[in-house]
Image (cartoon, rainbow, N blue to C red; front, side):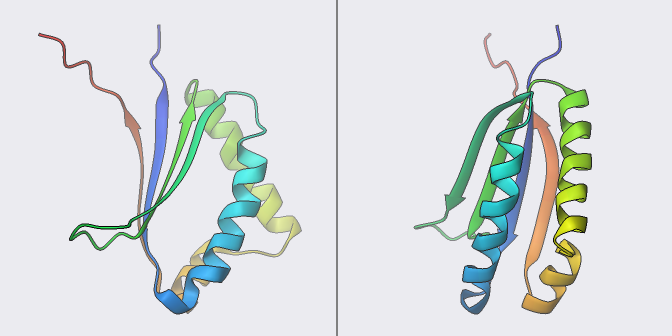
Length: 108
């Protein structure tokens, strides 16, 4: 049985870019959380600690096929709204660290 996959995206977002960044996160996540296979959604803002990533998004997916379908749906939404994520990141000075993760079983 395949274990759940988590898409974890971390962002360093300058203060001046936060409003635009969060608006895009809201619109993209509204779509993603409605898709089949989406099991969890979190958008986290750092409130303390020494780390530089001030926003983290986490989406849980039932399987790799759900993630692939979500990528297509997100690309379609972005094309329909003429949104280019990398262009926005470059323009606003947002740094990213994006990836898929699986939970580890730590029982002894």
